[in-house]
Image (cartoon, rainbow, N blue to C red; front, top):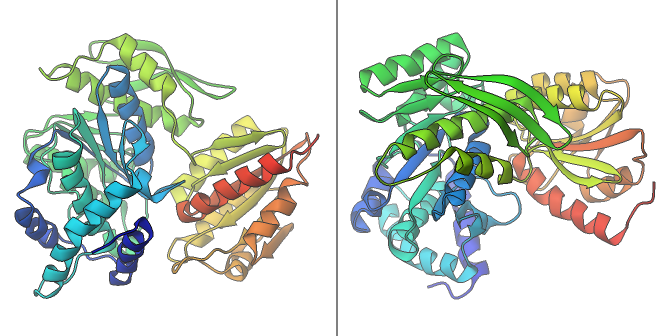
Length: 440
């Protein structure tokens, strides 16, 4: 029995020791014990390599603009653990975490004694979310972000109204496969029979895998650059503007406040899903509602400007595709600035490709490490880099304080890498800049 939030959180995080255990049998076992809460809600399922969180946010914001209450299940968190289970963007309360943990803990102990073994941290949190949205805070709809892969992901026991697969890249290759096609096969596992699938997958081989699975499941498929297109894109000071065209309509002047061309793709997926929901009897989402929702959408840690004077940006670019999107955005927006990049990553990523891309655009690059079981050592990152102007630091907190104070009107500080690192770095930078205003 947990009495405090800290006790509950410690037990949840302790389950990280079990690592990643793909498969649905443990989730199905727990759902049976809980009376199948996963069947008592309307959902949309969002998978893919990059852009899942942003797509969830765009769709959530559209639905909120339509007056609906929207539950979300996302990972990892940026500012606080509770945000992984939220309603209309508001994280669940500490007391609710304690209550949910006390409900799931006995099941986890019982399951541990079976041949299936105990549930992982992610399975525990997923089960908590199902129980929460079914029994404690019922919403009009819940948006479920896939944790890893799709086919065997803990979330893949829902029967959604629609499924979304964002772009696909080579990430988690030790688990999901070493080719785009192998990874696409795992992602395509969320496609359900007769359930529409919206996708921004562009790599031909990967898209073919998605199409084959959609055909097998008789699921209507809507593909970027086929059934819908992004046109007239232009970057503005704090966001992007684009036109979305479909077979039967053209939505002009859609504006988003998230930066980067890749975010127009995520926004387009959300709009397509919203258009589909609008055709059902349960939701009414006008074009004006879609427009308003997109413009209001905010997702932390994605090319986020946390200070303008000095100019400081954080971005959770944690794989090759994410780094590529960051590089493109920085190159197009800040070609007149000297770029100082601070980078931390997990050691199980394809670090050579990521660092190579950053080396090419960084006038200065610094490598740091942080306290996390899978975090790469700063010296290992430093060794990979071929930059002529590189440095490393074990104490990232003090280093960031020093780095911020070197930014002038001709430069920019970009803090990027693992989302786990970003979740620690963002509040630290905020606090320092608030208490130590820097005059330029």
